[in-house]
Image (cartoon, rainbow, N blue to C red; front, side, top):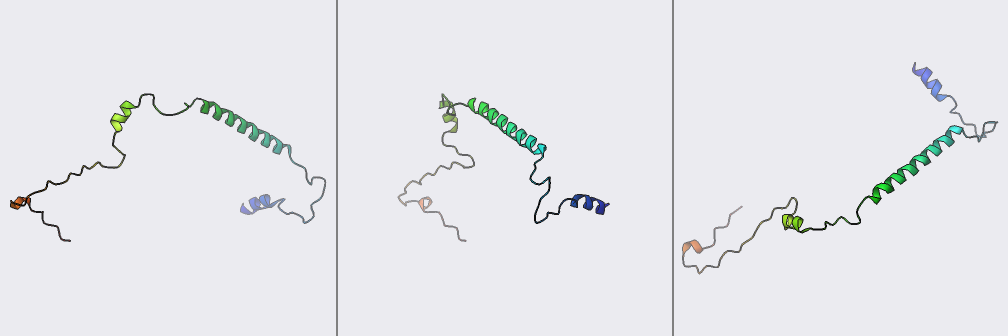
Length: 105
């Protein structure tokens, strides 16, 4: 079975060094149909894309961004907001005012 398939696929694969004959250089009408079909499809796709692009607004900025800014003020996706406060300066009178011990690694 494989030999028969190989023989059928291998037919016509030999190319002479000097091609000639009545069929040399002729193209099939199927090639012309294929090229015309591809050109027509490309033209239709371009026209459809242009129609869709004309529907888009000139800019994507909202007319009233105040509500969005209030909800999104200072936030960033994936980032946590951490407030850093400075400790009050102490006079050193009480033992609670001393610096905490530093961890050892």
